[in-house]
Amino acid sequence: MDYQNTLKYLYESVPMFQQIGGKAYKPGLETTHKLDEHFGHPHQEFRTIHIAGTNGKGSCSHTIAAVLQAAGYKVGLFTSPHLIDFRERIRINGEMIPEEYVVNFVEDHRSFFEPLHPSFFELTTAMAFRYFADQKVDVAVIEVGMGGRLDCTNIITPDLSVITNIGFDHMQYLGHTLTKIAKEKAGIIKEGIPVVVGKVSGAVKRVFTMKAKQMNTFITFSEEFKRFTATRYMPHNELKVCREKLDLLLEEERKLQQIQQLPMRMMQVLSFINPADTIHAIDRVIDRRKDAIAITNSDFMTGLFYELSGLYQTENCLTILAALEILKNSGYEISKIDYLTGFSDVCEMTGLMGRWQKLQSYPDLICDTGHNADGFKSIRKQFKYIHEKLNQELHIVFGMVSDKDISSVLELLPKDATYYFTKASVKRAMPEDELMKMASEAGLKGTSYPTVVDAVRAAKENCPPKDFIFVGGSSFIVADLLANRDTLNLH
Image (cartoon, rainbow, N blue to C red; front, top):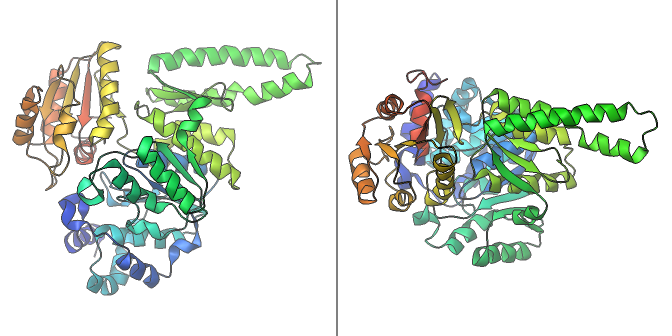
């Protein structure tokens, strides 16, 4: 078989949650352990970092991987779902697993796994672990597929566990209360392995505190970093102003360094501030015409600039910083410039797509894979900023899958936007006319289109250059958009 036929075989032979939803969900680790034994327990041959959470898993996984890559490590990265190519799920230093490896893996082992009837995700996880071991990665960042306790990635013993946040998603599998969902995700906490937990409070926070105590391990809540870390959204024009100020600071630093008898303490301070590396990082963001999340603390007094500029990234930043701090304290060698590089270049270094990704200017066209109420609470804030502060009218291309809590998301969307309702090219997609009817009942006005391409074309035709187009509601909507970038002339 060639690569395309191999993918066709996989999609048709093993149940795939991405395509059919709950029928493909297979909780429990029995099949995973059988696959792991067959492939020689490959996950034991490299270090790992395990990442769970309702939202933010992908951003945190890719950014931690980018910083470790910048530090010189050979980094495996296992994430899901993919947007365009299956191979996005399995990368080493940003490079996707070769097609040939996927083909050979299936051909060499199908006689073993066919009678076992693994799910698509179980088989993909086994492939990733074997590939990382074969390529002798130093460390692999492993993203949980769903939940944590019964997820097939949960056979690893990582250097660090990370749980980004807790929100309502996949309730039919994980539970209908936040505490039940938290208990499932807390299942990745291991005996004696440190854990970082993102934004949580109340009873949910107690779930993690109690689990960490039970597992005799140290827990860090990223909220603790808020006391000495400032994060804020910085539009492109403000980034350019900041860049000019850094230039002035660099010039002053050079003048001071020319003073022959400068006190040692002053020399140390100048060496620590060193805006030159920050300037290189901010230039990379500006050159791509992107906005950023600007982060400042005692380690980054001149700023750390995150090219993932969705407002929700202000929370993810704290989780990432907490995780990297623990890794540094446990022996990972990571320098300041590694942070600057990883944060400003995460997309190029890891291949990350779909996180407040800018595809066009005049009008701005942004896509985002946020797909549940928890994610859209933050996206709504960004819509408000764009409309009220930047005075841009909103044109929203929107679609969801049928097994999500669609009503809760629709209630969060702005009523003063123009909508283009559509459906993605997967079986789980809600038909566009049904979605438009639900949206109309929620006070949203727009027109329906049979494909994402049709909807985006209409938005581009109707939206003046000064205004703003958003494409999202589902990872599959974003996938269809990105797969048709050439057709839509989005570059």
